[in-house]
Image (cartoon, rainbow, N blue to C red; front, side):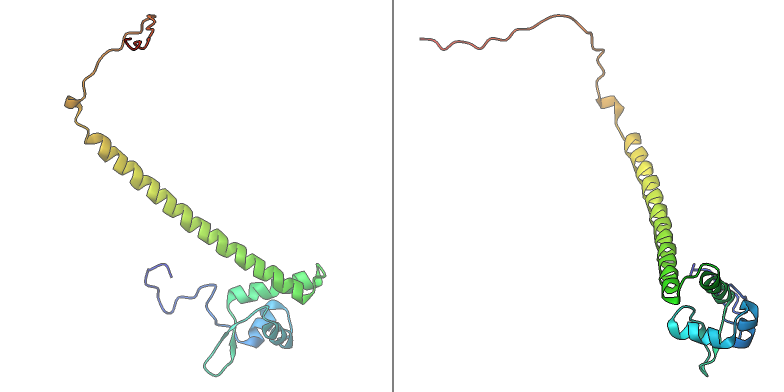
Length: 148
C-alpha cells in the first residue's frame, strides 16, 4: 500500500463486491463460464469466509477482455492465460522501472547537493593562482655522460 490511511468503506477497482450472478450479468457471461475461468486460473475472484466468490470491477473488466480475446480474436483459453500472465509481468516490470527511476533521481539529487557542499567548502585562499604564459620555447634534455 502507499502508506496513507484509507477509508475502510471506500470502494476501489480492486474491492470485491459483486457476487457471481451480478458479475455474470455485468460481464455478459454465464455464471458457469465464470466458474470455469476461475478453475482455469484466468480470473480468480476473492472469496468470502463461506467460500463464495466476490468479483471486483477489475475482475469484471478482465472477464470482458477474456471473452473478447476468445470470441473476437479466436485465442484459446491457454493462450489467453499466457497473455494475461505476460501483461501482469509487464505491469510489474513497469512499476519496478518507475520505482528504480525515482530512486535514481533521488540519488542524483543527493549527489548534486553533496557535490555543491564539497565545492562550497573549498578554501580558495590556499590555492595560488598563476597566469600561465604560453611560449614557443623548446627545451632539449640530454643526460650527462658518465665520467671516464
